Image (cartoon, rainbow, N blue to C red; front, side, top):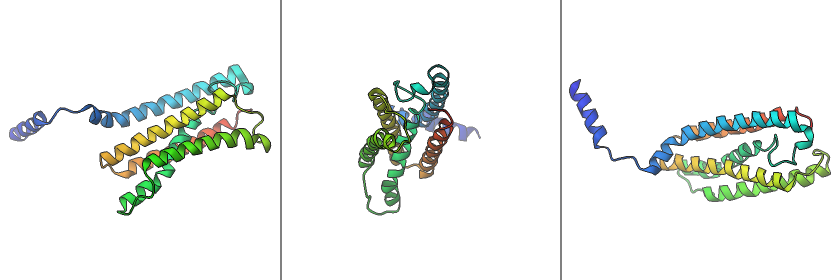
Length: 191
């Protein structure tokens, strides 16, 4: 037993010091969990603030409204869905259809397209009562880009560390469920 523990200690002491990049990748899951909790707390705080102090008139006018943080999960979910065109061929030994960078660019295009659809078509067909302010549109886009960037970082982590894809898939599915769930909950608030 003592030899085993000495060997274990010797192996531990002979390891090279951890590099910053490795430490960042190892800490990524903890950071993502903290970011997830903080995001949920922000949603709760913003819903409370908008509901109590601004009412429906504040939606789409202020920098951040009750729909803004759903854009983070929309960015994550969109990148996750597009990344199937990368991961499925990669892990089946076939030629990759699109790169992760192209997935990110397509996600940005989809985010911009969504804002255009939301602020032009939804007004025309009566789903949305008024246009969002330019600053609200900008913040929604920035939050969506941040969500997509987080998912891109996580995808690169999965590839570089040769991790099992199930963690990536589970996080993506959870993000989609949170996105849909938050929109369902928010839809109960008047506009």
